[in-house]
Length: 529
Image (tube, rainbow, N blue to C red; front, side, top):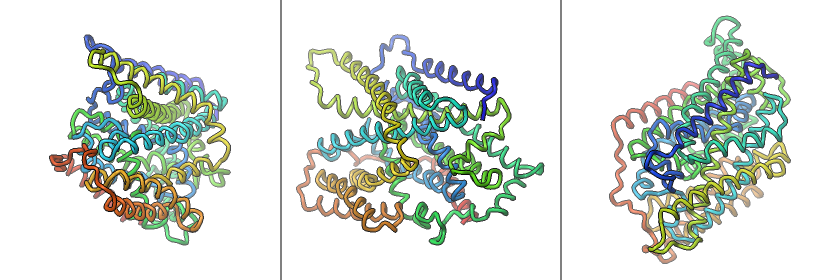
């Protein structure tokens, strides 16, 4: 695939425009002085709902989702859309039950919540774990898979693409922090959705052979009906990936609650809201966008089954469908792909800087005395955050090839690796939020048990689907955490999370929107069961 001159101009215009917009929203207000930690890491706690919702999706959707999920649509079918549609339902739960506690207690980071709820040991343990995971697993995979996507479409050297993507993402958010990321994400998401809808429209039009997109969709459902089964039975060759009802009532909930509710990389946007109602509007907006994502990402992959049969690798489906685009539109959709990579990378960089600065550096550095300038100390933390962001992307660029590029199955292995920890993390936070008797000993037990049980079950029960294993490990870790908490002293003096006056009541508009999301999901699953 070759980019025409007009396509290159469109991509360059996007890069200049998004960088200029990021610098503009990052500017210091007159008389406000340089940014402090609240400004830099939580966007002055003043994000509007539309920025929160768009930023949640932009942080979530990157090359691995666009290329990988479209490839799964090619291989598996619409069933892969459960990752998107069940996430919409998870976001409603996060907005109604988790955010009120986090915002009431002015939480900045997830490790900070763990210390205030359980004690300092688990904060340090989890902060170091998340830093290692974010830098050497998530950030490396985002820029590596992003560079592959860019190379396939534009034909540039992959190492060059790797460096350019990482450095651009760093520079465009370095000055403004989370505010620069979140307020530009509405542009990134608009471009992402628009690009995906264009590809879906053109692929369905091609299938319709002049009779329109509806005819094209009807042809898909008629000729490859097995690609429109939402719930796979045990006879399906992809049952191990999506084990039947587990996507509705099983292990997928564990992964979703951990990712959308307790992941600094994601939840940081909602923590920066100007109010609880604004945060809830933001997650509701994100839930509606999640309902739309399978059209943008999965449908082109399914269409490729007919339009490009026999692809060597399913992950080639999305780039192949991009070849249907005329010059100019190809540049726009390619810019959308780059936008998704940049937005996700920048979000991850900012979260790494936030955790390192507030949960590691600030905990171990010397505390300023009363006579010292606390404002200057706060600004030094912002500088530390910028340095941490720079170091993180350099490490990711240097280690991406040896860590992620050594195997074609590296990303799948990474997903399973993180799944070893997911059940324990979910147990720790759920008990921390809703059971006051839970203590640090129980929390640490859950974390250790999650890893050991996950590894043991992977070895002893290789035929058990990964998603089902997460569900079993979650229940076992939960039981162990409860027992250990009851058998060990409850250090109530460590718990400074106040929940006595937290209100879970939601506004009428949120309730109506949530009901609409649920009804849409019911219709979708009833239609494609």
